[in-house]
Length: 311
Image (cartoon, rainbow, N blue to C red; front, side, top):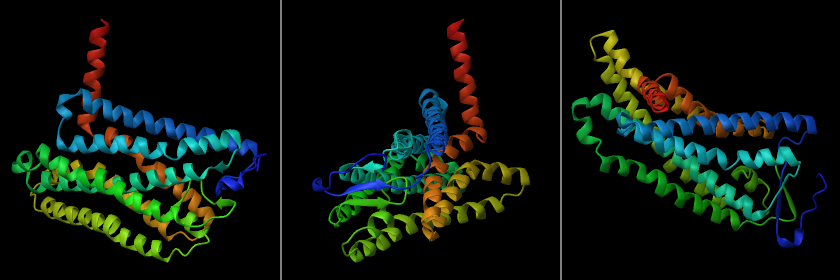
């Protein structure tokens, strides 16, 4: 255990068992994760900066995108810095307090991501199906009401699940076969009865996972129906292309979540968890930058302004 001796008398201590490899392999993982983390930070900070600095991007669509980019930065910062620390030092031990804190923020940000993607789907639905009334329907008040569940319900749900976990019993050094304090691993390693928690998780999956995903699906069923009624192929492509970036992020998010949920191998869980944590935050700025003329245009305008200031 790399010379680290946990203090058993102070309560349970968690040992992050994922990526338990040689020093050379740890360095390779460290460099890879660091590059991914820097890419996520720089990409999402660029999106936030562009939306904040360019008045033309002060619209509901980019308001939600700015929230999503802010969330993604906080989301990856919950797990990746600790993983890099483990790879750098070889110290796999995590305190009980740190583990519970990490679990809380991981659950909260995961739930928030789903709610924000749902809000963005509703925004695209209104934009495509009610274009003439879009500005009236998607007012500032409506936008804030749509993101309210994301930033209000998620912390409450995360608090409930974390309270369940803190009431479970652990002894000594607890092996966590993942790169962070994963909920599934914490339940499997506990000596307590977790039936109540598992029941709550099923109910939670219905209201926090299934219902938002159904709302996204229903929104896109209506969008596709509206797009198919457009007479020209150019008009159909132009209308649906405004949703393509969001569709890509939704497919990646829910696709990786479903694959992770269906996984039965502990080794697969580690890799899939890493993909689930990093894929959407990494793809989000790339997808919206490369496939969005407004973002590219805003970047050009800001670069031109800076050149003018320098001259």
